[in-house]
Amino acid sequence: MAQLAQTAGLTDIQQEILSTVRAFVDKEILPHANALEHADSYPTDIVDGMKEMGLFGLTIPVAYGGLGESLLTYALVVEQIARGWMSVSGVINTHFIVAHMIARHGTEAQKQLYLPRMAVGEVRAAFSMSEPDLGSDVAAIKTRARRDGDEYVIDGSKMWITNGGSSNLIALLAKTDEGADKSYKNLTTFLIEKPEGFGEVAPGLAIPGKIDKMGYKGVDTTEAVFDGFRIGADAVLGEAPGQGFSHMMDGVEVGRVNVAARACGISIRAFELAIEYAQQRRTFGKPIAEHQAIAFKLAEMATKVEASHLIMVNAARLKDSGQRNDVEAGMAKLFASEQCAEVTQDAFRIHGGYGYSKEYEIERLMREAPFLLIGEGTSEIQKTIISRGVLREYKSRR
Image 1 (cartoon, helix red, strand yellow):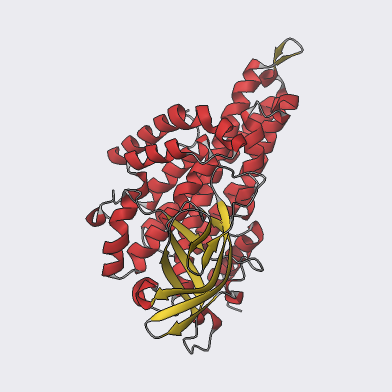
Image 2 (image 1 turned 90 degrees about the horizontal axis):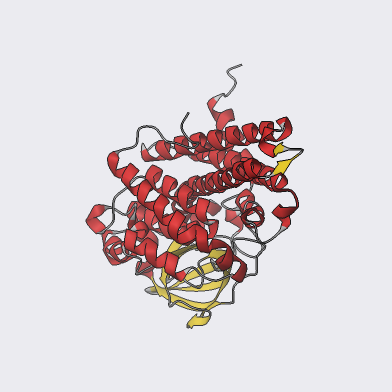
């Protein structure tokens, strides 16, 4: 058999991209990930390397300076990067979501303004929907944008913004008053350019310091506080007030495929570490891989890795085909993230006491995997989406 998580039907270009990324991960990420993660240091050199490879423009249309690749290609790239260090995949995830939203929903002027600079990593984007008092309850957003002539005035706080300090563009969801009778029609997406850094980065906009996290270190996660922040009406995505909910949900769908791909990457790495250690560590006169208890555990881990990869690839290909994939993306995110947690814990157990040491890579993976259970919507939210979808499809005819 071939090694795990192989993808059938890839083009020569896709295979070349993945081969290049895999080599980059092995040479430039894996040898440095533990030290950078433990120091909570931003991976500047790694990010510069991704710029040189064109990864920031991987899915941006060729007409705007990108490579024009599919969501599947991007997901497979993310899988490889997360195999090296999950935080690095976070650097490009929100950037990719915002680029997707601009390419799909932006005006031509917005595409010309942002996409060429995003393709080379000159503009790096963040995605801002959550707030201190809410996560998945999007309709309850409190951040407000009030129309004042040719401008909007924004007040409120946003939370859990990945790349909040290192980005210079934020896609922000805020409540506006468009006179709609449905709360979801009162939400608008704004494209907000800002300087990089922390503190008051612009009049009326402050980015407090990084949130200290259990894992997912290196990449900055922040709050954003808006207090009388003014922005032109031409900063509304697509110049379409009241369409923010659909814009953001389109972004979240591809984001959930991304999280599934990250989970696959961590699962692959945890399995690689476990199966290597199990062949080197000896007890009772033989490698522990030859003990049935460990061999069966490796078999279960391998099956979970393979199944997670397949369901993630299916969700990506469905989105690429132009079909609705909210249920499939939810399934991929739910299944891959839950299996990732199990595979990582099994790898940790195989390592025994050494797994608890910061000298071993599995310790880092144990702190990274839980993030995927809550990022882009908790497992419970995914189950809500999936159940509604299957009930809709299998509606009783009695």
